[in-house]
Length: 258
Image (tube, rainbow, N blue to C red; front, side, top):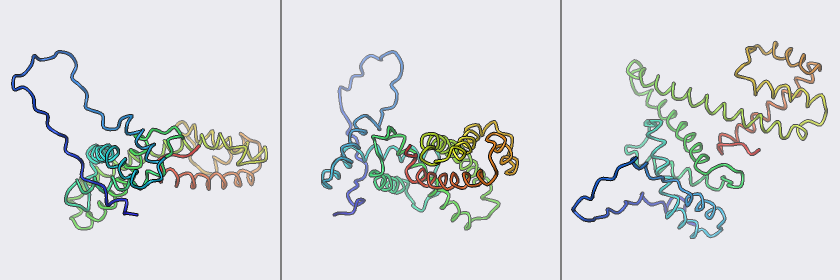
């Protein structure tokens, strides 16, 4: 079987259409919005790609109908979030690396889960570029004068903080929904479920919570549930492991299977 990356072509050049040299009358009204690159056909092509077991057919679907949307998605992510700390001299090479990464993640996408392909691959591509950008920034930072790098560092760190806040919020929303749905499977005893539900409520109300001390939180949960501390500790430990496992899934796929 050929290497997945070997068949990926450079983005096609769109043909230039010639017409009459006499300009027509100007049309009034709203300007056209930019042409969409991630369309319904892209969604259909991804479904057909995933449904096929023939590698030649997959290669053709990808190169003819998926590559260009992935190329434009990579381009927009790079320029929108300014992921310019790279190991390559040409951003076209970085776009190619992003496309290769998205191709590797294609088989992880499940359209039956209800997640939109554009949303899924935007998150996956952005997470890849954040790690790539930050790693290269650290390398470059070691080679330049620290004073000269202060301004750029502030921009990168602020971008990273804003992105982390958004990702954390999205993941916690997935996490609380997962606990709600599977609480009877995760915890067989009524008192364990009562504690798990109380902790999950605290996660949901995290933005309005003014208690950050661990001991105070334990007391607060005990007052809510009327159970002993060892039970709270046991349930908390299990929820912590679940949090860890689901977070790995979120980082890898961009969402959590509920």
